[in-house]
Length: 472
Image 1 (cartoon, helix red, strand yellow):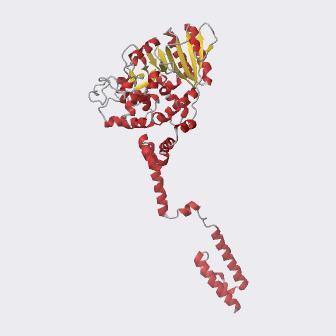
Image 2: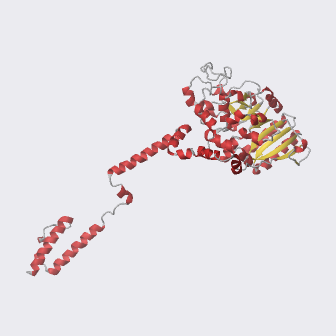
Image 3: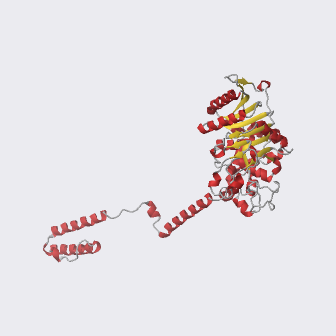
């Protein structure tokens, strides 16, 4: 009786477990349970328990917290939707004009964008003497002057007053980050400059310590070759960059391809701050790229200063590629009859009669090229109206008006300045800056490139931009 009771218990438990886990069939007669004793029934129960535990042990482990968090289908869809929206915003942001980006960012980062104006208001509350004491100390420029003579291999160092020496022909050149190609360009520059003139030149070279030796070696070699005497002044490029850093900070967001590169941006805008760097005794100066090659006497270029009108500050030649036609495509869509971005010599399908600015007497305005810049330094220093145009608000308004986003530094600013305020820029003939770059001809403008590239007259100076070879 006792064994029979255990048999009924085992039978019921065995049947329940089998149906739940489908481990054994529910037919118990095949096992002969009726003949088993209590110990045998207990042993069978233990075997069944082991099998069930083994099955449970191989069950799939629960997924991580991310799966648990997103176990609902609507949650997964929501996450995917948010990712898709973020990707769309990034794509639109990357392909949006700079000014539109500023408007978008202002909605989210208004405190950051207004920080400058808040700082200005806060500074205005303090007395002028307090502001002066807290203003950063400007870097001190200490150029070094030398006299290079063909009769001596040594260079004579001059004092701050140049030992009474002076020259009416002050030429500024930037030579930094020396490399093989830059060395060849400067060698050809110095060779052609000294070959075609016998004038007493004062050459101002803005360079770094690593490049000073190469500059001096090239100049001494060419001076001995042509038996010349040259006044040579060296400027530290880092100090010069610091002097014009505020100008670069205002303009680089609009006219630089690498706005976060402080050192490069400062060099790109050097012509706009040269009046701070040059000695105040200098009035007329010319800033040249190293890839300029002379075909005539540089004194003839200095004679162009005599043609400046009383209100003109700079002299630049026109750009000879359609780069600004490309940059101004938004503006030109809104104003199809504008002369801004057209070649200087009008094409048949581009008449100048309907242009907004008819200051070029029927000619187009392709922009300006800063490979050759003539500067009347005293006028620039004393021109309040021009200095006001270098403020952040004026630059921003000018850029917004023409939907402009450039990448050529001071050249972009000169181009906008010359179109909006043509009375400030003297138009230098293209024969003094005959650019040779043909990059745009192979990048979408082959049909109209020749109209921009056209330059009539006897070439006085070649500009080998884009590493172009200079004609023999």
